[in-house]
Length: 130
Length: 110
Length: 232
Image (cartoon, rainbow over all chains, first blue to last red; front, side):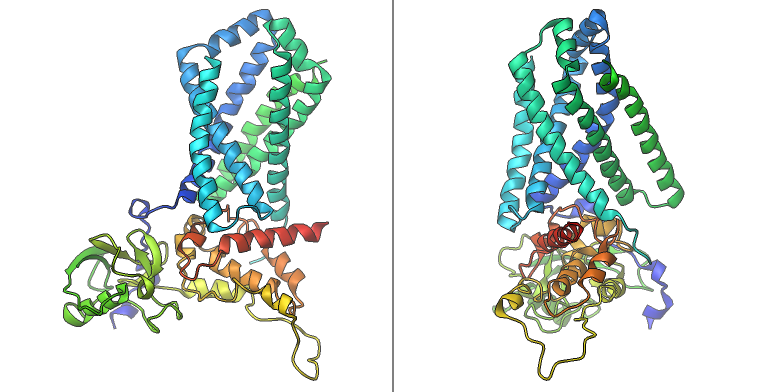
């Protein structure tokens, strides 16, 4: 028996993530995680910016000037997408926690809506700010 | 293997902090749209007035709790060697503590 | 019809490979399992896969079909994109070809004590359950433990040794929700763990692939809800 000679350690596992087809909910969930990490990384910069804006009139002007710079706008696009997606996907989870939209059909619809609305809201906010 | 109790509390803290942050963001957005503080003086006065400052302090507390549970979950999922995991958790805890120190003057200032 | 099948024969292969099969199907070959048996009978009897009832009841032939988990016996050949790519359940140790090692999966199932616990002396006749109480088990008892869901759950991929996975958690609720069971408190306590239950983050991949159309993600939410209710 060839089976017996092979130790358990020698057993391969198939887990090539590029060979799998993901449902829309998985995309929504993955983006929820990515956006959460983005928001966490942005947190120190935002705290610093907020403090700068409250630290005298010069600081306020400096903060305004920084926010209008091109790199800041690019960062803001990423940030607002992360915020919008994270909040919407979070609301989706909170509703599911209390058994609203837990059926597969409803969850698919809400995942689509969150994915699309998150991106749309980010563009909208950016358009409104500049 | 014994269960590590308190997992429910962490999960609940994540949900409750999320709910509070959601309500605060809607409230703050509404308040900002009504007041539209222009210029340094108005901005500072608006930010430091009690109706914003006190809920804001709570918001930051919720944010730190929420970030801790979320980042902890990410580490639990992907970082498996125990030494590396403890190091990662340590980095996150330190970063959040420093953020809290950075936030303190904002919410404590008169 | 063209198939690309994951092959790993211990002793012969040092690493997994994909093997191509072009099969002439018979008119009555309608399900994916029929095609696998056709390959086995006419081309390559070294190809290993599990099967038993061949009608979606025993749960033996769960596999990854064109990137999604499902049962070969109830997957229609019509509608499958070619080449049909077949791989073992993601994340599970491969014994040979499409056959995976389910040992840990069943250990986890056993760990939730999948039987009604009641130490009270039995009544004269059976332990009764009202139709309403019995209805609580609908959507839970039908699980056939094919592991399609657990094999498609990212949380289970990352922590298969500590997270119980959707199939086992659905079964956990099946006994938590049983009106005849007297161990609900202990069961919930046992699950209050950062890994066993709380690695689930509601991705819902489990529900997407369940061949019995059950909703393990919702079952897990129900467990959390029940746990929360014990606090108040």
